[in-house]
Structure formats: C-alpha cells, structure tokens
Length: 187
Length: 187
DNA sequence: ATGTCAACTGGACTCGCAGTACAGGAGAAC
DNA sequence: GTTCTCCTGTACTGCGAGTCCAGTTGACAT
Image 1 (spheres, rainbow over the protein chains, first blue to last red):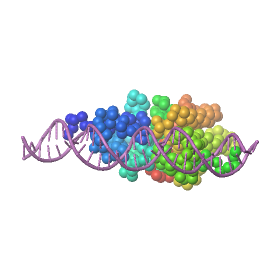
Image 2 (image 1 turned 90 degrees about the vertical axis):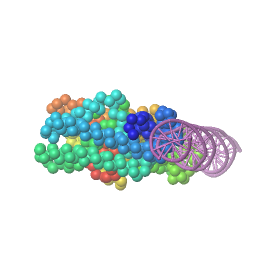
Image 3 (image 1 turned 30 degrees about the vertical axis):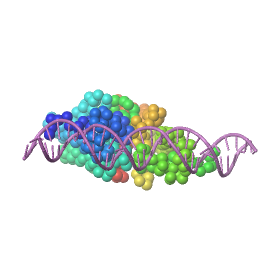
Image 4 (image 1 turned 180 degrees about the vertical axis):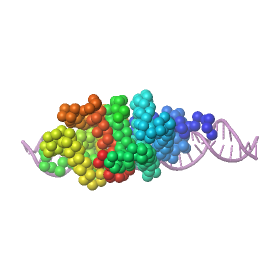
C-alpha cells in the first residue's frame, strides 16, 4: 500500500520534471516511459491519456503548494500574534525557501496550464481555477484579519488585494523564466 | 508592395487569433489555411515551418505593443510635464484601452511563448527576452526621470521597480485567463 | 495446486499533423 | 514570350497519441 516503489508516483515525478523543463506538449510519452523504465502500455495502464496525466500532475502540485503555504503561514503565525507581521514573516519565509531552490522556482504548473488551455478538458481547467480562487481566499482571510486590527485609512477591495499578491507572484515567475535570472523574487 | 490583400498578413491575423484562443500547439496549420482560404503548400511558401510563423507573430506583436506604449506614454507626456504624473496618466490611458477591448486582454503572446519555450528555437526565445528587457528599459527610464524630480526617501532599485510593473501586468493577465473574469486590470 | 487479480509487456494498427518534394498554373512585369 | 512571384495539387515520410488485445509474472487466497 505504501512501501512500494509505486510506478505511478515515479511516472509523475519524471513527468513533472520534464513538463517544467520543456512544456507539456513538448514532452512525449515515449520519453517519459523511457526514463521511468516501463513500456508505453504500462503508461496507459495507469493513465487513460495525456490529459489524465496533466490532471494528476496539477492535483499533486496544488496539494503540495497548499501544504507549503499552510506550513509557512502557520509557522509565521506562531512566531507573531499580530496578523500583519505574521503575514510579512510568512512572505519572507516563502521568499527564503524560493531562493534556496537550486535553479530558481521550477515554474508554476498552474500558469503553464493556463497558457495551454485548450489542450485540456474542462476538468483540468476547473481544477486550475479552483486553485487560484483558493489562493485568493487565503490572502483575503489574512487581509481581513489585518484590516480588523489596522482599520485601513481608505476602503480597500480585499479580493483585489489578494489577487494582486498572487498576480505579482505569477508575473515574477514569468519574467524569471523569460530572462533566466534568479533575483527579483524578493519584492 | 503595399495595397494588396497581402496573404502573409492575412495568415498572421488568422494565426494570431487562433493562437491566443487555443495556444500555439493546439492550432494546426490545416486550420489556419482553411480559414485563410489557401492551400497547405501556400502556407509553406510564406513560412518555412511553424517556428517561422511563431517568430513572425512575436515580432509583429512586440512591434505593435511598443508602438502602443510609445503612443500612450508620448501623449501622456504631452498632457503633463511632470514625469510622475505623466506616467500615471499613461498607465490610466493604458488601463482604459485594455478595458475597451471586447473580451478583455487577448492574452500576452510573450507569456504564452514563455511557457512553451522548448517548442521554439533559440531565435524566438531571444526575441522574447529582448522584448521584456525593452519594457524594463522603458519603465526604468520613466522612473529615472521621476527620481530626479522626486528624490526617493530611501534608495530604490529602479530596475527592480521596472520589473515589478511588468510583472504585475503579466500576472494579472495570467489570472484573468484562468478565472475568465474581466476586472482587476485596474490595479 | 489452482485460480485469480493487479501490474504490467509486446506488437500491430489507426489517425492527425508537421514537414518535404516537386510538377505545374495564372497573372503581372519586362 | 519569357521570367518571376505566388500560389495549387498530389504524393510521400515520419512522429506521436491513442486503441486493442493477447499474453506474462508474481503475490495472495482458498
């Protein structure tokens, strides 16, 4: 149930790496199965088609990201009672983690999917949408707490603020990919 | 030389629309030529391969975007001598133009290309990189002028600031694509 | 020992799409 | 009337996705 090599997970690992390096379409099934060491038929035994692979990849990525966020902001919250400071600490922690990754951020699977939209079925797109809405909710909750403690001088749209944070992050990742640089993720 | 229907331009128009709707890979040459009303051979007469099409598309898009920026910030500059206010007016104009587009922003070809990286050859990627560096330079120049008139209280990295502006814009576009909403581009 | 089930392998086949090759045609330009 | 540009049409290669299916191998159950 758990101790095995787990071929399916192995496939996902290999596929994720390849997809982030070359994009989804550019990654052939041939390639994946060769790297994993199974046959094509073996792949199709685990995944109905490439779409199913994409879906599994996304699900796994989203779960991992959510877990990371929970962890980081949870720890930040323990360190500081003030919601504003906790959030700032959380962002700082996040920035440090990202800076520690070997080759910069591996690239956001979600944004990758967003730009290949029509390759996938409705389910995959829905997943993606939900993930983004999840981020928004998360940031919104933090901003709400903050706004309670520090009533803003002028009224702010908390949703918009949440979107902005995610937006900046996504944008930064795109830029990083294009430029091949490794700083900037501090802002 | 200029007055003709210009098949090549026609192809580019059709292809751009399709690519922004469905992504580059998902757009077949068959489809394009059918919509344009020429034969497959006709397509290959104008473009060596799909890569050449991508390149031409990118070039055209970058030129158009640069022209738009020149126009908008040029007009803004005429309206107001103060560089800070001019920039703000420019951004506002830009936001208005974007809001006027029928279906929200058509999607940034540059970011689209960024996420399909390996499908293209080095030339296409170089183009992309240069475009982003161009934006950075543009914003940097504006910030320099502003910083001259309004010396910042603490030292700021002007490049980083420029990147941030582009980053926010890119991020916003990604979000918009995923969510299918049409506000947000005001921030 | 026998059966059965999950997790595969191997081979053959279809289909859609990119790309190549090349022969030829229609119209304008000289 | 030749030449050049801008195509059309046909035919072919090759790759990758996806399907079908027959068969193998090892674990575990009765």
